[in-house]
Amino acid sequence: MIPLVSNTSQKTFISRLMQYPVTRAILALIVIFVIGLVFNGGGAFFKWPAHRDMLRQYSVFGILACGMTIVIITAGIDLSVGSMLGLSAVVFSLLTIHRDWNPWHAIPACIAMGAILGVVSGGLISRFRIQPFIATLAMMVFARGLAKFISGGMKISTSIQQADGSYIYKNDPAIFKMIDSRILDGNLAVVTLIFIFCLFISWLILSRLRIGRYLYAIGGNEEAARLSGVPVIKAKIFAYGMCGLFSAIAGICQAAQEYQGDPEAGVSYELTAIAIAVIGGTNLMGGRGSILLTLFGTLTIGYLDKILSINAVSEAGRLMLTGVIIVSAVLLQRRRK
Image (cartoon, rainbow, N blue to C red; front, side, top):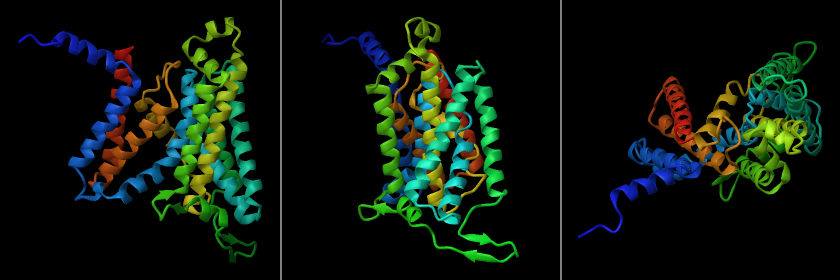
């Protein structure tokens, strides 16, 4: 009997199918999930709390990755997202705990601060032609230093030291409890809903607005985009401004989850955000990627970390394995390109 489809045709079809970033992202997630089914940590992987806690933990990273995806699509990078998260956590805690600000005033203030710092980075990159790596590295150092200056190098918590050395204690702000709470009988964290909202906003920008087409054009070929009438400077400033905005939102969530503002919060978070975007399939060379890929990347990294955690793999081992996966993802992108 002659087969209806030859082996060569099957291989060609599979090869073409694997050229799509979404296919590769889904396949990577499936592989990680199967690994979890095999190495299930004594059945812990089969229980919903493990998945719920993973979503809660990685929602903050996912929010950072939303902004990072927008920037990477323009062929840029933002190393300051972790520091801006720490700065936002400190400022939000200071305003709500120490200054007794209304949260509906404190939240917009922190988001505006993050957006402004992102705009500054975008301005340095687009107007002054500073390399994104250098500009955002400088912003990373500046934001971390500002967080330590504002907090005096100490965590902003409900215990407040007075001039005479004594302490007074305040109640946890209601907004902290609300953001850190769970809904649907404790099955879904509010911070995960915030992550989903950030995904929607990012999708709207990249897929439904003109500015999204500008960002893809800049990442594909900046000079061609400029000659075509794309406002490159404004678009880049917008991209980094949105990245700063998402970093501030992540900082607010981080402060609420920890019930304090830690000036050291967010250290190395930028690496995880980049890993999520790259493993999802967003091309570091720019011009390719989507927020759907970022969602798959978040789930892939989140499940990988959870599987290693429930199987008692050390943090050192987890970090090394994540590094190997990042390199593999970049090499796969280069091969497909």
